Length: 298
Image 1 (cartoon, rainbow, N blue to C red):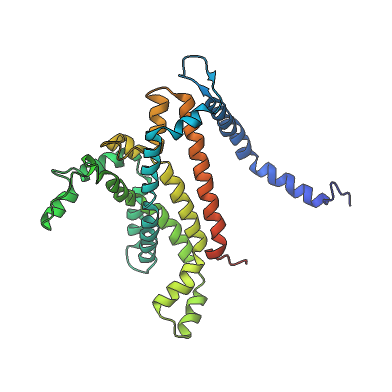
Image 2: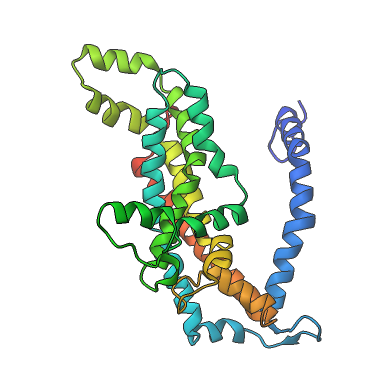
């Protein structure tokens, strides 16, 4: 058999087939993403207001961030918002456990809980502006029935960010659906064997369910972190970064630099810093995954 670079003909045949199979994605990435990435990096080294000619300034945009208080404020707000990730992980799993039971109308309940996660962001933001309204919003009405005076929520420097974290629960159905698929793939023989050994429901959950769905937990954790760093619509529609920059998310600040003040060079530099932050966070999570993620093939 003819060998090329130490590899068999069969190896190269499979390799070519594989690359041909994913070629639409590779071509799309090269045309629509890779070019934009390189263009964005080159713009980040310039001072450019869109209409004029870009002026090369080297790394000055990156140095400027160190002294930009709004950069640090947006980074702080976005980092605090990451607290929604564990909340959504736990709620999504609890919901999936409930909807994994054999009860009547299961399909209806699964649809109801999943639908909010596919609703358009602007419509959801407008809905939650009504929910958080201090005078006639449903949350403050319920709090009033309990004898509690609700805060101004989106108008409060203290409560605006927690309000957006509470709102993030709206999309928990997406994670729930992935958990549900993972729960249904756990072999029932494991539960039967554990039951015969005298394991209760809690021990079966802790020692069988959780380890078996850890790959999905890892996926939802990474997707949650990436999604939290990219929050934009709700902050733009509901608060526009206020009050007093309490909800100035990183991507919102990036947008303002690019399309309000036309600092495209600085905005591109902000985008690259965000890319590096997400890359590092994802890498750290993946590095720790070998200690807590269980794969059946291992």
